[in-house]
Length: 461
Ligand SMILES: *Cc1c(COP(=O)(O)O)cnc(C)c1O
Image (cartoon, protein in one colour):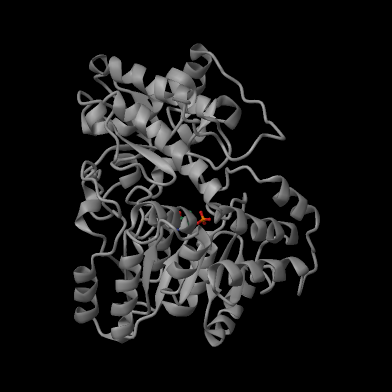
């Protein structure tokens, strides 16, 4: 029997950036100097950086070539029309407003659509989305299916909207109070979990019935399409581009953080189908971002993004990416390391509460694991636990979320599976000595809001 050929990346490497493997002693000094806050490290002090997959991807030779062809005209740049053409052709939105990143797209669109007292249902709104809703004294209502909140349940589309919860919101509030519903694909907050086409279709039908527009928060739309192709009945033989077009049939508007599935380092946009609405957003784009044909982006970056959208919707690229996430996931789970099931599109979520059972929750379990992983191998993840959950705004008591997670986000086309092996070995070492890890950290200093970025910690002796 001939050997089955193993899987390998769908690209080769043309440019490299050296990274430095430090010693444990160096890392002990550095992390102490940042008061045990991983955000405080310089990137040179990190060997493998899994803090985020946002803006950290590697561009292709085609994207770098497009960059050189950027048109930097203030108004009507060729690069803008390249981007608008790509958004129209690939995603199906004829009108594009560029913005400098995803949250800026939210700021512009929500300035136009949201009024005080409004209700915005969705599936686990992303932090900046929720921030831009609450800043306008409106309310985000989470209608994600219950399966999303159980790390052990295996469901192919854990990002789905619960149609009954959504209809309850539509029934409870008058239509005038609900400017739109926002569906996040993939559902980042629930762990990069996808939304099925069937669900998008049902959301759209229900929204039509109640005459409420549908917005897709689309940062990882291509990864979502990959999961539809590989998990949903009837889509195995469709191309990613066909699936993407079908998905976006069910949206009236899209917001995009191009730092994710645009595979660029900075950028965002809003896509519209309705020309009137598009034009009514111009004034906000001009005030907050820039003129309507650049909106905070350089011509060269719009050019690279137009190519990035094309590359991100190719199966071979997505297969390479998602199989790498799964590669790390399988290594960890086969050693018994508890992770959010199943593996998402862009990140692994290690269940720190289960991994370090002896550390009291008051001593920040996921942060403790994050610091341990950095000390072990120079790998940087990010805490999704009590530090991030912050204090109750009224009582000022610490809020303890149901789960203490350490997120390892995988940048696009940046690291090889050898790097994933290092990450896995480091976590396995920590897992093997978990009984000896019994104390965590206490807060020495913190800001009144968004404390996780700047807070200072010290080890509990
Ligand atoms: C990253 C992200 C945003 C915000 O985009 P930025 O480019 O970081 O401003 C919004 N929604 C989702 C789902 C995201 O992942």
